[in-house]
Amino acid sequence: MKRITLVAGVLGLGLTVWMLSRFGAQAIFALVMTGGWGILAAIVFHSVQVSLSAQAWRIIARRDLAPHLPLRDFFMLRCVREGVNNLLPVAQVGGEVVASRLLGQRGLGLRRAAAATICDLTLDLLSQVLFTVSGLLLLLALVRRSAVTDRLLESALVLAVVGVAVFASQWLGAVAVVEKLLERIASHLGWGGVEGIRGIHQEVLGLYKTRRNAVTSLLLQFSAWALGAVEVCLILHFMGHDCSLATGFVIEGVGEAAKSAGFAVPGALGVSEGGYMVVGGLFGIAPPVAIALSLIKRLREIAWGVPSLLLWQWLEHAWPGHGNGAEKSHFPHSGR
Image: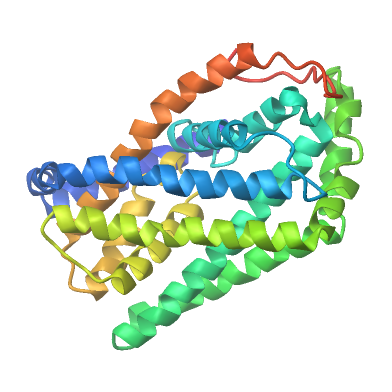
């Protein structure tokens, strides 16, 4: 796995270097600097998206309508998830593992924490599928149909199938299979605490069965994705390239879908830039501007990610994992 990540990272870095050299690194960085206040606006505005995603996770984590842990706990853990996924070579899923364990230590229990994170991740994926498909349908109304739009629609169809398949597989027992696999690995390697994850499959199904919570969570996640369109408009405005909210919606949908598709590449390096460049070209946005847009979004990720990694280390000591029925986990974990 490490070798695959390394190779993917090298390819992503190579693609980024090629784009910078092909379209002019000096011009691109000049555009990034022109963004100025747009960078600060993106950093501040992202707090709204994180808050919505954190509340969505908090809601799906409970079976009843009464609150469990405060929103600030889920907000901090959402920051940790994004920081780990965006800045560390963990194929976009390491943050969920870290956050699940910390959430279990906070008092939710390892089984409920893992199940809640699986549900949240699945609903996040489904909401992104809805967001991307909505953006591409809007694209057809804004630009003429071409080979590029056809390819994008084909990709959206694949993404939709994957999203539905992931959700359906959980009802068909995929989580139970993973659970048994983890038990075998833990037994083989002599890890303790495996009893804390038994029953995750039923826990996941139980959380989904609280339909009001599941639907509310899905809508909040969709809203968080949709607000990314506002971020795109803000950044482009400060770079001197104004666009409509509808255009920003399409650009963000395709750009984030490209980033998710490049999950094997650390930080989706090069893949995300390529996605913004392709869709931006449909609206007359020059490649240097599209690449600069992606780089500014990366600066926002760094501005949030570095403090989030420090927050992760603080939470490791601040939430020692006791009380409130939390199962102790002896699984090895990174960052300690």
